Structures are given as structure tokens and as C-alpha cells.
Amino acid sequence: MTPAEQRQFLANLRDPLWRLSNLYKIIAKDTSVITFRPNEVQAQFLHDMHTRNVIPKARQRGLSTVIQLLMLDSALFTPNFKGKVIAQDQDAATEIFRDKLKFAYQNLPPALLAQVPLVKDSASELLFPNGSSVAVTTSARSGTVQMLHVSEFGKIAAKFPGKAREVITGSIPAVPPDGLIFVESTAEGAEGEFFEMCRRAIAKQEQGARLTPLDFKLHFYSWWDAAEYRINPAGVAITEKDNDYFNDLELKLRRKIEPERRAWYVKTREGLNDDQEKMWQEYPSTVEEAFKVSTEGCYYTEQLRKARMEGRITTVPHDPTLPVSTFWDIGQNDETAIWCVQQDRLTYRAINFHEQTGENFDYFVRWLQAQNYTWDVHYLPHDADAKRQGKGPKPQSAKDMLQELAPGWRFEIVPRIADTNIGINQTRGVFPLVVFDEARCKDGLTHLELYRKEWDDQRAVWKDRPRHDRHSNAADAFRQLGQAHANGQTRRQITPPPAGKNRTRSARVV
Image 1 (cartoon, rainbow, N blue to C red):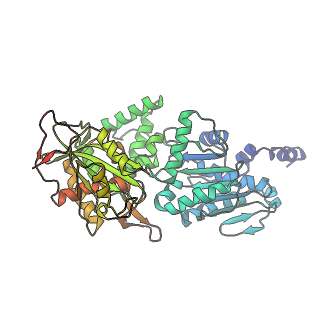
Image 2 (cartoon, one colour; image 1 turned 90 degrees about the vertical axis):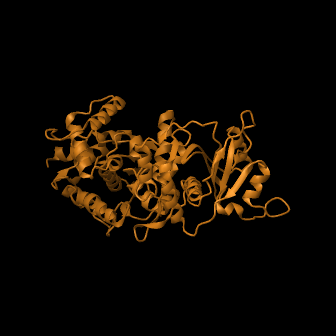
Image 3 (cartoon, rainbow, N blue to C red; image 1 turned 180 degrees about the horizontal axis):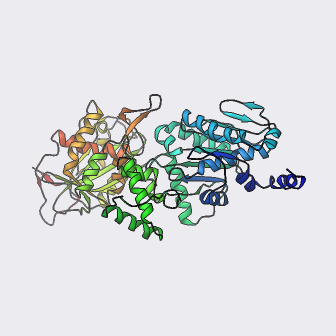
């Protein structure tokens, strides 16, 4: 290197973007070693990034690579800088450390490498002479760091919710306001810490709100603008249904989805055993699609799929000639969910759903009265019969309190069963008899769709019991219908009240 070239090189080292485009080697997809140069997506991200960044994305868009190289670069050129990557599991942590951070460091230009010898080189951390370091771990607990990258947070949140909560409550607050946080992942359905983080960022974006340093900015990256996601369409069978999907997508995006991209999408989905939900998860077309339901471990996936195919999730208006029953779950932390159902011979018409937290029974009675339905029976879970000391002089059960608030209504207890799984199977059995009003039962249907088994972190398998989360109250309330139907409580003939009678009174049961 001539003296002039050396001076220019030293001048270039002051520019972080030049360093990112010239100093670091990466392993390409074809296993060759190349100098990293940001592609269009990576360059746009570097231009748009905020202090806090949440990134739902399609697979292999290169965002992890640019974030980790930015972390390494910051450590090499900033004294006392600490960067940390949280990986979903040990295999992922090992790969990130070995193949991204350490590989890029070991392949620096020799003259530069000689200036930054390692003070510490462990299996998960690089410590440099300037007091800076980069580390990769699976633990969410940490001290103060200037840059945090949470890799595949959607998968962490889905399988290790406890660790995800530690990220939210421990790791993220440890980054100072002027530090950098990157939370990226493919999605894992419409729940969990990653979903909630994205939901808030989407709301900020839609509102056009000005972001503070502590607000997360949304960055979404799909498959349809990736140069490599296209193949020759010759010989690829693209169905009319597929083309309808792509045509609708063109309208949403206001851009063409070329035959080469359509062919790539169809063949990629074929490689995933034609699992459309896996495509939504791994290669979403829109940010909304990224969070379509991931059904792994869910109890009612097949039942809801059939309900949709058979047109049983539709518009179901209230029929004034039929009385309405309700099916309740009363949660341990003031969470209550209610399904409103009419029975037409052997068909159950789910016409409404309501849930609320932190309200007393008076609130729910008033809400039900406001619907102006004719009431049949209000079915309560078995623990609604347990006597508890309240504000009055003697212990009362939930059933007692409701009966006092609505003396003209009829309340029945659905008997307890020894095994919740039996009740879940009974509920699966009643699904073919139920039609749902799509609009008024929207929240309840979402809860049923996401009601799933508890995950065993240690054994990495689904447990044989439900997870108690924000979806379980609605599912438990609906389970009362399944159990009541199975034990014969709902098999009765309903006589509508005579015309002109007060419709808020109980219907006569024969």
C-alpha cells in the first residue's frame, strides 16, 4: 500500500458505512467467502434504523447479518462498547458467534487485525484492547449494553415465554436511551411478546406518531422484493386460486408480482408440504399476514378449519323467536368471558361474545340486559358454586351473587370433570353443530384459534394440558357449551314467549 493509499485508508476508517462495505468478510449462501457489501434492503435498513427497532420479516433477507456486523464494527471502533446477541437456543448462538462475529473478525485486513488483538476469546465472547466486547448468549439476563440484538424473538416468545418476558423486563431496559436495540424474527402467530411489540409499533406507524428514543420503530421486509426469490416459471403449475392471491396482493402493494416470483412462491410452498400457514410465517407478503395464526400445539385448529370450509363462520343474526343461553368462564383474576348462544333444534348459533377484566358481576348483568335478548339458561362453570366470603354477612358463591343481581334469570352449574382434556374433546365434538357470527364473535374466535397446550421448556415438547393465558378464559367459557351438550343439559325443547311479552325475562323451558 502506497503512502497515499494508506492515508486514504485511514481516512476511510472514520466512516462507519465505508467500513461496513469494505472491511468484513462473510460466508455466502454458496459457501464462498466474500466481502460484505450491503444489498438494497440492508442499506435501506441502515438508513432508516431508529434507537429501538422491531423487524418482522421473511427468511434470509440479511437483516441479522448487517446487525451483527454493525455490532462488531461498533465494538472495534468505539471504546468500552458492549454488544450482545440473544439467540433462541444454543445451536443458534454457536452458529452466530462462530460464523458471523468471529469469522468476520478473523478475516479483517491483516494490518487492522494486528491492531485489535483479542484480550479474551471464549466460546461466546470477544473482548478487545479498547475495553469493548461482543457476546452471544441464550440468556435474557444482562447488565448494561450499548447494543442488543434479539434474534428470532418470535420463536423465543412462542416456545420460551418466560425467557421472552425476561427480555422485555430485563434485557431491553438495560440498554440506555441512546443505545441500539434490534428485535427481529419471523412471526409465530398473533400472540406473545414479539406480536405485542409489533402490534404497538404498527399502531404508532399508522398514527404517524413521532417516536421517542424508547419507542420501537417497525421495519417489515417481505419476500416479493428479494432479487433471489424468483425462478423460471416454465413447468410450474400455478392454480387459479394462487393467481387470485397474487392479483389481490398486487392491488394491495400497487406493484407487479411477476410470473418468476409467483413460480418461486408456489415451489417454495410445495417444499413446505403445501403448508400455507408456514408460508405466512416464513415468507409473509404483508405485515398482517406475518401474524396469521401459527397452529402448532393449538387445540381447535381442525375444528375451526372445517367451520370455515363449511361456511359456519358467517353472519348469524339474532333470531328474536329463539331465546339465548350464555356460557361463562369466571377467571381467577377478575377475568370473565361469556358466549351468547341460541339453540335451533340441534344447531347452536353463537351470536355474540363478550369479555372483560377487572369488572364485577353487576357490569356483566348490565351488559347482558342491554342486548335485549330473551334469556333461556345461563351456564356457569363448576367453581361458580363455591362459597366465598364477600362483602356481605355470609359467604356467597358467584352463582348466588348473579342470582341476586338478576332474580328472574335461571343459572345452572356445568358439573366439574376430572380431566380438562375430556372437556376439550367434548367441545371438539360439539363444533360441527355450531355456527358463529363472524363479526360479533371475532375476539372469541381468535381466542379459540390460539388456545393451545403448554410448552415444556426443558423437554422441548408440548405438555398434555392447556396453557393459561389471555386466550384460555374464552376457550374455557366455550368448553362449558361442549360439556353441557355432552351431559345433556342443553337438550331441551324451547317454547318462545308469547308475542308482546317482556323479552328480558326468561323463556319458559318445557
